[in-house]
Length: 223
Image 1 (spheres, helix red, strand yellow):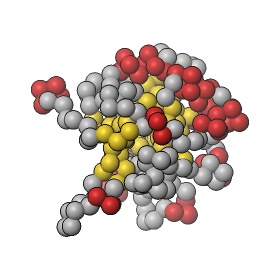
Image 2 (cartoon, rainbow, N blue to C red):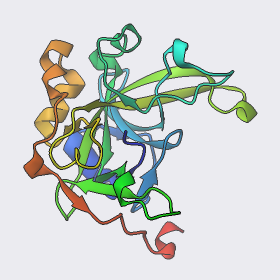
Image 3 (tube, helix red, strand yellow):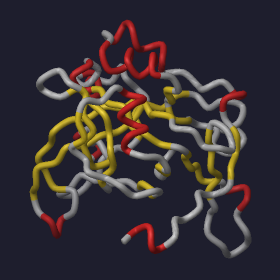
Image 4 (cartoon, rainbow, N blue to C red):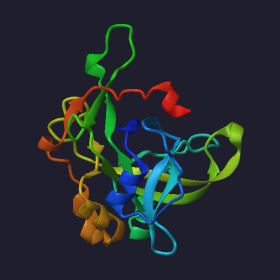
Protein backbone atom coordinates (compact mmCIF):
# COMPACT_ATOMS: atom_id res chain seq x y z
CA UNK A 1 0.00 0.00 0.00
CA UNK A 2 1.43 3.34 -1.07
CA UNK A 3 1.74 5.58 1.98
CA UNK A 4 4.53 7.82 0.73
CA UNK A 5 5.12 9.72 -2.48
CA UNK A 6 7.23 12.61 -3.69
CA UNK A 7 6.41 15.72 -5.70
CA UNK A 8 9.35 17.31 -7.53
CA UNK A 9 7.77 19.68 -10.02
CA UNK A 10 6.36 23.19 -10.28
CA UNK A 11 2.94 24.71 -9.90
CA UNK A 12 3.10 25.92 -13.50
CA UNK A 13 3.82 22.41 -14.78
CA UNK A 14 0.80 21.03 -12.93
CA UNK A 15 -1.45 23.85 -14.17
CA UNK A 16 -0.34 23.38 -17.77
CA UNK A 17 -0.76 19.59 -17.70
CA UNK A 18 -4.21 19.66 -16.07
CA UNK A 19 -5.49 22.91 -17.64
CA UNK A 20 -6.09 24.26 -14.14
CA UNK A 21 -7.49 27.79 -14.09
CA UNK A 22 -6.37 28.88 -10.63
CA UNK A 23 -4.01 27.97 -7.81
CA UNK A 24 -5.50 27.98 -4.31
CA UNK A 25 -2.75 25.79 -2.86
CA UNK A 26 0.09 28.30 -2.89
CA UNK A 27 2.87 25.72 -2.78
CA UNK A 28 6.37 26.45 -4.04
CA UNK A 29 8.53 23.70 -2.52
CA UNK A 30 10.95 22.34 -5.14
CA UNK A 31 10.63 18.80 -3.73
CA UNK A 32 8.67 17.33 -0.86
CA UNK A 33 7.55 13.96 0.47
CA UNK A 34 3.88 13.38 1.23
CA UNK A 35 2.76 11.14 4.12
CA UNK A 36 -0.75 10.20 5.31
CA UNK A 37 -2.65 12.94 7.13
CA UNK A 38 -0.53 15.72 5.64
CA UNK A 39 -1.58 18.49 3.26
CA UNK A 40 -0.64 18.18 -0.41
CA UNK A 41 -1.82 19.66 -3.72
CA UNK A 42 -4.62 18.08 -5.72
CA UNK A 43 -6.43 19.28 -8.85
CA UNK A 44 -10.23 19.20 -8.92
CA UNK A 45 -13.14 20.93 -10.63
CA UNK A 46 -14.31 23.91 -8.56
CA UNK A 47 -17.89 24.97 -7.90
CA UNK A 48 -17.81 27.28 -10.93
CA UNK A 49 -16.70 24.47 -13.24
CA UNK A 50 -13.08 25.70 -13.47
CA UNK A 51 -10.19 23.43 -12.55
CA UNK A 52 -8.22 24.49 -9.50
CA UNK A 53 -5.25 23.40 -7.43
CA UNK A 54 -5.98 23.17 -3.71
CA UNK A 55 -4.32 21.61 -0.69
CA UNK A 56 -6.14 18.71 0.94
CA UNK A 57 -5.34 16.16 3.66
CA UNK A 58 -4.33 12.70 2.51
CA UNK A 59 -6.78 10.11 3.83
CA UNK A 60 -10.47 9.69 2.96
CA UNK A 61 -13.08 8.88 5.65
CA UNK A 62 -12.78 5.33 6.93
CA UNK A 63 -15.79 2.99 6.60
CA UNK A 64 -17.52 3.27 10.00
CA UNK A 65 -17.16 -0.45 10.77
CA UNK A 66 -13.37 -0.04 10.70
CA UNK A 67 -13.06 3.10 12.83
CA UNK A 68 -11.35 2.23 16.10
CA UNK A 69 -11.65 4.59 19.05
CA UNK A 70 -12.90 8.16 18.87
CA UNK A 71 -10.89 9.36 15.89
CA UNK A 72 -10.52 8.47 12.21
CA UNK A 73 -7.00 8.12 10.80
CA UNK A 74 -8.33 7.96 7.24
CA UNK A 75 -7.91 5.67 4.25
CA UNK A 76 -5.18 6.63 1.80
CA UNK A 77 -5.67 3.92 -0.83
CA UNK A 78 -9.04 2.84 -2.29
CA UNK A 79 -9.59 -0.28 -4.37
CA UNK A 80 -13.06 -1.78 -3.85
CA UNK A 81 -15.19 0.75 -5.74
CA UNK A 82 -18.19 -1.58 -5.44
CA UNK A 83 -18.36 -0.90 -1.70
CA UNK A 84 -21.36 1.28 -0.73
CA UNK A 85 -18.96 3.41 1.32
CA UNK A 86 -16.96 4.45 -1.77
CA UNK A 87 -19.73 4.55 -4.38
CA UNK A 88 -20.91 7.97 -3.18
CA UNK A 89 -17.64 9.52 -4.43
CA UNK A 90 -17.41 7.92 -7.87
CA UNK A 91 -18.98 10.86 -9.73
CA UNK A 92 -16.87 13.59 -11.39
CA UNK A 93 -17.66 16.23 -8.73
CA UNK A 94 -15.80 14.07 -6.17
CA UNK A 95 -12.86 13.12 -8.38
CA UNK A 96 -9.44 14.74 -8.37
CA UNK A 97 -5.96 14.07 -9.69
CA UNK A 98 -2.93 14.01 -7.42
CA UNK A 99 0.41 15.20 -8.86
CA UNK A 100 3.51 13.14 -8.12
CA UNK A 101 6.86 12.30 -9.64
CA UNK A 102 7.73 9.13 -7.69
CA UNK A 103 6.06 6.85 -5.14
CA UNK A 104 7.31 4.39 -2.57
CA UNK A 105 6.35 0.88 -1.50
CA UNK A 106 7.81 -0.92 1.54
CA UNK A 107 10.35 -3.59 0.58
CA UNK A 108 10.54 -6.13 3.46
CA UNK A 109 12.79 -8.47 1.44
CA UNK A 110 15.57 -5.84 1.51
CA UNK A 111 15.40 -5.31 5.27
CA UNK A 112 18.76 -5.67 7.00
CA UNK A 113 18.82 -7.61 10.29
CA UNK A 114 17.86 -5.24 13.10
CA UNK A 115 17.09 -2.43 10.67
CA UNK A 116 13.93 -0.71 9.46
CA UNK A 117 12.00 -1.87 6.41
CA UNK A 118 13.35 0.19 3.47
CA UNK A 119 11.30 1.68 0.68
CA UNK A 120 11.60 1.03 -3.02
CA UNK A 121 10.82 4.06 -5.19
CA UNK A 122 9.11 4.02 -8.58
CA UNK A 123 8.89 6.61 -11.37
CA UNK A 124 8.01 6.65 -15.05
CA UNK A 125 11.68 6.91 -15.97
CA UNK A 126 14.91 8.14 -14.33
CA UNK A 127 14.01 11.76 -15.17
CA UNK A 128 10.86 11.42 -12.99
CA UNK A 129 8.34 13.22 -15.22
CA UNK A 130 5.08 14.49 -13.79
CA UNK A 131 2.29 11.93 -13.43
CA UNK A 132 -0.99 11.83 -11.52
CA UNK A 133 -2.82 9.44 -9.24
CA UNK A 134 -6.53 9.01 -10.03
CA UNK A 135 -8.11 10.28 -6.83
CA UNK A 136 -11.23 11.23 -4.92
CA UNK A 137 -11.85 14.11 -2.52
CA UNK A 138 -14.54 15.16 -0.07
CA UNK A 139 -15.24 17.78 2.61
CA UNK A 140 -15.39 16.15 6.05
CA UNK A 141 -15.93 17.17 9.66
CA UNK A 142 -14.49 14.95 12.33
CA UNK A 143 -11.54 14.02 14.52
CA UNK A 144 -8.24 13.08 12.90
CA UNK A 145 -6.09 13.54 15.99
CA UNK A 146 -7.59 13.48 19.46
CA UNK A 147 -5.46 16.40 20.62
CA UNK A 148 -6.84 18.57 17.79
CA UNK A 149 -10.49 17.75 18.43
CA UNK A 150 -13.19 17.97 15.78
CA UNK A 151 -12.29 20.04 12.73
CA UNK A 152 -13.40 20.63 9.16
CA UNK A 153 -11.20 19.13 6.45
CA UNK A 154 -10.97 18.56 2.74
CA UNK A 155 -9.71 15.00 2.32
CA UNK A 156 -8.40 12.97 -0.61
CA UNK A 157 -7.28 9.46 -1.43
CA UNK A 158 -6.49 7.60 -4.63
CA UNK A 159 -7.37 4.41 -6.43
CA UNK A 160 -5.22 1.32 -6.39
CA UNK A 161 -5.23 -1.65 -8.71
CA UNK A 162 -3.34 -4.88 -9.36
CA UNK A 163 0.46 -4.45 -9.40
CA UNK A 164 2.36 -4.67 -12.66
CA UNK A 165 5.50 -6.77 -13.16
CA UNK A 166 7.74 -3.97 -11.81
CA UNK A 167 5.88 -3.42 -8.53
CA UNK A 168 4.67 -6.98 -7.85
CA UNK A 169 8.03 -8.46 -6.74
CA UNK A 170 8.17 -5.79 -4.02
CA UNK A 171 4.48 -5.24 -3.23
CA UNK A 172 2.33 -8.07 -4.52
CA UNK A 173 -1.06 -6.74 -3.38
CA UNK A 174 -1.56 -3.45 -5.23
CA UNK A 175 -0.15 -0.36 -6.90
CA UNK A 176 -1.62 3.13 -7.43
CA UNK A 177 -3.82 3.87 -10.43
CA UNK A 178 -1.68 6.26 -12.50
CA UNK A 179 -2.61 8.73 -15.23
CA UNK A 180 0.17 9.78 -17.61
CA UNK A 181 -1.44 11.95 -20.30
CA UNK A 182 -3.54 15.13 -20.37
CA UNK A 183 -6.25 13.14 -22.14
CA UNK A 184 -6.48 10.67 -19.24
CA UNK A 185 -6.61 13.54 -16.76
CA UNK A 186 -9.39 15.23 -18.76
CA UNK A 187 -11.40 12.01 -18.85
CA UNK A 188 -10.97 11.30 -15.15
CA UNK A 189 -12.11 14.79 -14.15
CA UNK A 190 -15.12 14.96 -16.47
CA UNK A 191 -16.36 11.54 -17.57
CA UNK A 192 -19.09 9.36 -16.12
CA UNK A 193 -18.01 6.38 -14.03
CA UNK A 194 -18.79 4.08 -16.95
CA UNK A 195 -16.42 6.14 -19.09
CA UNK A 196 -13.54 6.21 -16.59
CA UNK A 197 -13.64 2.91 -14.72
CA UNK A 198 -11.27 1.28 -17.24
CA UNK A 199 -8.54 3.61 -15.96
CA UNK A 200 -8.33 1.52 -12.78
CA UNK A 201 -5.65 -0.70 -14.31
CA UNK A 202 -1.93 -1.34 -13.78
CA UNK A 203 0.45 0.95 -15.60
CA UNK A 204 2.28 -1.09 -18.28
CA UNK A 205 5.60 -2.41 -17.04
CA UNK A 206 7.54 -0.52 -19.70
CA UNK A 207 6.23 2.76 -18.22
CA UNK A 208 7.65 2.31 -14.72
CA UNK A 209 11.16 1.84 -13.32
CA UNK A 210 12.76 1.60 -9.89
CA UNK A 211 14.68 4.75 -9.00
CA UNK A 212 16.80 6.05 -6.14
CA UNK A 213 15.05 7.86 -3.27
CA UNK A 214 14.28 11.49 -4.16
CA UNK A 215 17.12 13.91 -3.54
CA UNK A 216 16.54 16.47 -0.83
CA UNK A 217 16.63 20.10 -2.01
CA UNK A 218 19.38 22.38 -0.66
CA UNK A 219 18.42 24.11 2.56
CA UNK A 220 18.59 27.58 1.02
CA UNK A 221 15.84 26.71 -1.49
CA UNK A 222 13.39 26.17 1.37
CA UNK A 223 13.80 29.65 2.85
